[in-house]
Image 1 (cartoon, rainbow, N blue to C red):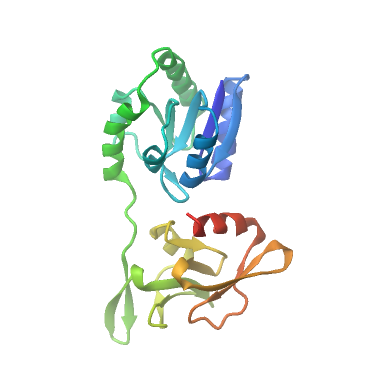
Image 2 (image 1 turned 60 degrees about the vertical axis):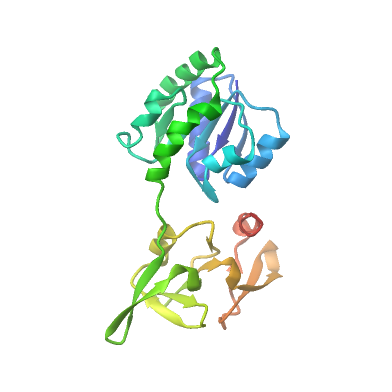
Length: 253
């Protein structure tokens, strides 16, 4: 049995691979992909695997975008962090789902279901229709504005006007298109969770940037990148080596 894993959390992807091989010793995991873009490219260039495990929320969008861009001819088992009650629609379709963290016993049940369905060659796109309607109502809504304090007044900053967020002296700021910085009552980690990952990228512990904020990208030592951001005097904005490829993919989506 050949398997493709589409999952944006490396540890989760590796754990899933280990569980699959534990239950199906002859299974071959062809690849582990973390974005819609990479999944589409892989499916366009390779024969369909026997089975695909697919996380719903990927690094660059919702996995249903894959089905809009390329024919998916393999059965799919979704992995998701959404609660079971909200996703009961999955159980009345021929494609299964598994809640995270993936449980070995539940995975075994899903694989048994897959083997049964494989004999009937199900129409994957048709089975996705009802599931997608469910997901549309459950997909995480990204924050569109932040409340800031200006003197004795409260005002709002639209996320669309933010060039980047940064942390300084244990305080989080956002820099907007008018070249002003505003203090936010959030940690940078909290801000990252609230934003659309297709729009903002966490380049380091200190910076979360939008593409329009980037004025220049310079090759730096040890295969890193140095960024010049609009309205910033910081000359030490570095993309770590381990994040460079992901950063390039994000820019090129």
